[in-house]
Length: 325
Length: 187
Image 1 (cartoon, each protein chain N blue to C red):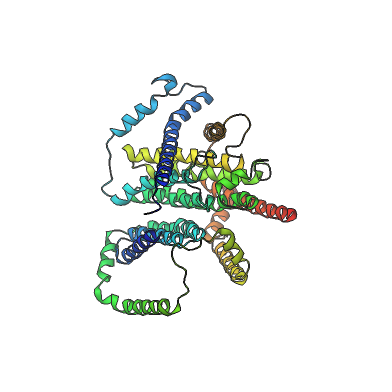
Image 2: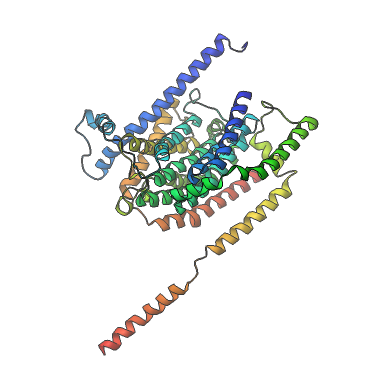
């Protein structure tokens, strides 16, 4: 135990505290986004939205929380009880864990992994099980159809989500997130990797099942899909998990394509928050503005348009890297 | 790191045992996923984070999803669990146990006399080094795997081809005939 000096102890405590602050920040951002989204939808659809509780309706979150905690927590007796309880935990935890790799400022960030971005893909892969188990354990036809759609959609879009970021990885020469941010000191990767950005944005929306790619939870056809049998805080975890996913994908876009914390005048944390906030708004705007396409069209668009586009993007990127070398 | 290695290895062995023993197919698959995740931790402890990440992404995140998907669609009820438990009699273990014991003996023997195997907490292998190895000494294996995958892809696209079935042809014919039939009646 000779390595356990007071210096190491202090550093460990500081690192743990920072990690807790980032964790709480992510959860609180996700939770508040539920209210912010409804207010913004109201603004864009020319109505008020929830504005009664607290200043600008900010207290609506507390009211919703109290309501959701006191609802009856019902587990279907005809379903698979263990998997039913496990599913929302996976949904919430897998996306929240991915915040680990995001470098917020030069000094802030939980883990500095060498595999970096691959960790996000791994967690996104695990996230599929939440939907799959939730749909299966509910023993409900609508839930099963929703789970089928969600898992097929997520698998299809994960394929080119990985490929869309390989251009960025190739240009940096590293999977590490901090290396990627530092490589964008001169110019942001949005300029050379525009098609990578577009396809990653589409894949990010599809993987978090947000409108217009929310066919797994289409309320007109399949009555909210895989979480139709969930109530109380189990539903709450699916719900907040979705918003945590939005914040996560927005933060990833800001980090990978828009230079992360880099920016003139303002301190790094403000730049990071501004960039992330902008993409969160874009997610909400997409929901307010775009209609929901047919499910088979969504799948076709992924395989027949986005996948070839990412492959060509990677090929051209590789060509230019070799040209420069 | 050594503690992590032994814990993960223990979890992997236990989870795999439960995969074989469990009578509920979906729960057995869940244990298989846990086993794969534990193997990923083992890779990580051995200093191969890239292999660990790929293990989670490819096996736990993609291949197992398809397994769960298929078993989910089959919708096996309590009847199958009953069948399964009736098949898991002690006698059935004899053959596999002997074979597995032989394998274990060979492994122990080669570990004992072979030596030269890296230990836990050794060098960390980066993604760059893995890539250099893959497209250097192991180029032939990579190319062969690519050909195999291409063949599988072509086969899959052939099976899933959207060709005219007999039913569709009949329906098209009926659709073409319908307007003329109406005309005749009117005439």
